[in-house]
Image 1 (cartoon, rainbow, N blue to C red):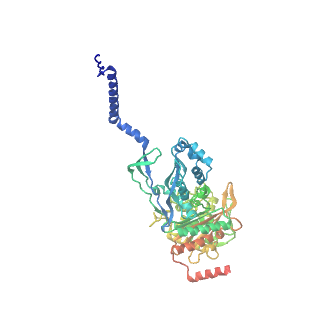
Image 2 (image 1 turned 90 degrees about the horizontal axis):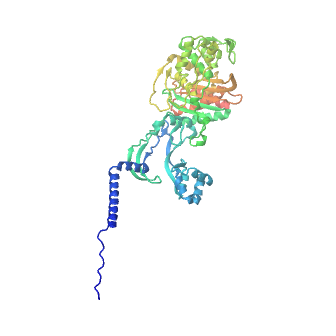
Image 3 (image 1 turned 180 degrees about the vertical axis):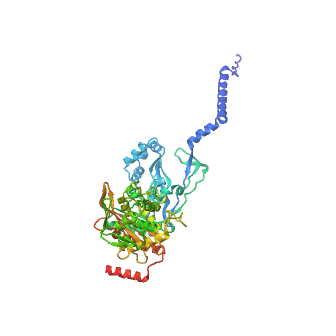
Length: 579
């Protein structure tokens, strides 16, 4: 039997083995080297690239300031709401989403057809963020919360809410979908109300969900609240009375402005037609513009006190000076200036009381052009009132270098230039203040912004007393008389200018000051194109003044200045007329 053979030993090292080991070692060293290179030399670049994909700077929402009236009643505030946005790419990645029952429910709650909603998503297939509906109704948001749909998300925002709706809409204005002011004082004080949004750095996932907060970059600052000069009680009263008058007389539009004579504050400003700022479908240009500061008109006879004031200031006449107006018309530059009736020879006071065109024309023609025009320039015609209201008109007061005597005569009774209701109210406030002009303010003031004496107290007091006869028995505006307060004012009825001359439509207005013993408010009431045979300012606008001023003065706690016997006599007369 032979001896067994020993098996061959496994070679400890072969060429193939060495090559394999070498390859693995080199690979490991390469990976290690690459990792070290990336960690040491490329770390900043890689971090930046990663941040581009996941780190975002998000705004920190701030609350828009509250707008309140002078008594603290809120006129505009922001309330939390939710908005709906979608990620089309995520929705399309799960085809079953758009064929689910929840998808149909989503379309229904959004008042859309299912096909429209599906088409909306398909047309934005590559997008990762699209607003579907902003500022949802709370019930809509609650319903959507209960749906289980990938790629459909709700985000909290703010919505502006206006508690008084139409009553203050033309003054307060409204904001847009992104809460920026678009009209009115919301626009004028937008920067102050908005504040400064903050910023924070966050890490988000694929679906834009925040998974990590990395800190605040800039602290947010909420918007400041503002207190307006408006008195909501007077504003509501003025709105009600103006709207009733516009409807009663079938007028095309109307405006009413009340100024505080002592400070220049706007206590009330309303227009018709109005709109509800809480409803986007009502925000149409013909409804949203504030006619009291944008619309211009020829003031007609409401300008006559300014002509009389100039003649008094220059010492040309006294209230008792006699002026001949016979035979009720006067030829100037081959054209006629006419009165409604032949008043004969009357005092300057009677000229205002009876609203004589011939009388004031004679006063104007007796003045130098410079003296006559200076009064209108001083009152601010042709300039804005300084209120800062967006879109405020400056009116139109441009005189030709070689203007005619007839143009001068017609300007004396309010034709040939245009003013806004706010400008006219400011001019009457100057008379009420004893000749002191104050800028108009929509913000609550403790004292006037500035003061400038432009006329003497004696002359303005004389004009005020003369204007009081306009609302007394025998005047053209007895309908403007108040029960408890002495009132001064002037009616105006002007034909509307059209291309080539004047048409058959009228503007009717009344401008007044109350109470005469210690003037507190100046008010202008204007109705555009009242229908029917009743269109004079004394019949259409004066009663609105009476109704608003009487109650407004009581709300302001102003003491009555009429004697008890006068008040009792007026009440008795009204009862007799009503009976």
